[in-house]
Length: 304
Image 1: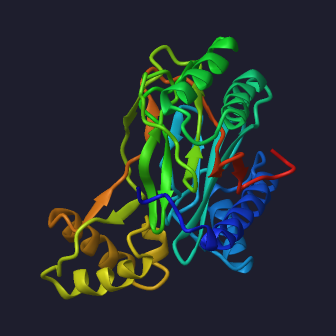
Image 2: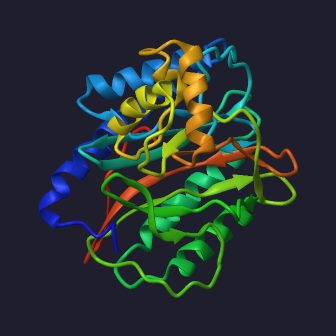
């Protein structure tokens, strides 16, 4: 599997994980009522770079019913008020990725929803070891979340992480899917339980996509497309945001090129994912390295 690493590379993954944890902790200090979503996103990405890493994807700040993939637009106007916020921060160093997330409740009304995903993550970590079935991990996550009276989000999952590959096998379900796929020693995995007070426990794609990724190596027809693709290739297949591109090129040129690259199948968009019934969503996530004695949490923090 792509996420089974050479143990001699572990130091690189540990460094990426440490920077990811520091950057997520930095983000939580800035997620306050009155803060600009765009400014927080920019500050966190600047923090990642100042610590010696690179963003593995654009910082995602998901509000209320949004579970994943909400990324600030270049002209983002959102000012935080009393939202439930899932913030997901990824860092890479030469393709070795640290992935972590936490939920902040600015309203003060959803403490148990936040605990549900966090405790589900912690309970899952306790059972990690080679030969553990991923279905059994999902069962623990589901039982923990339901013990708080909430539903796990069933069509989002944890995942393996490989070099420049943020969603490698195996998938780690957030419910008991009875999968017999087993963990293996030296795997890098991210476990990310999502809990919701929504009726369905399912998510769907919304609109206003601000996260993209190159999926095909092909030259576009227009010079604008080729100019933007040259920048995109520097991300080595990791996700990027239009607001990164408009710092280097005019917005009109970027928008034209993105439409072309999408039409030709060179890039793919990843729209925000929202809970079907409009329920609030919480998330918790760590990146782990599987050893013969259990799991090393690479994104460990004293704050969450």
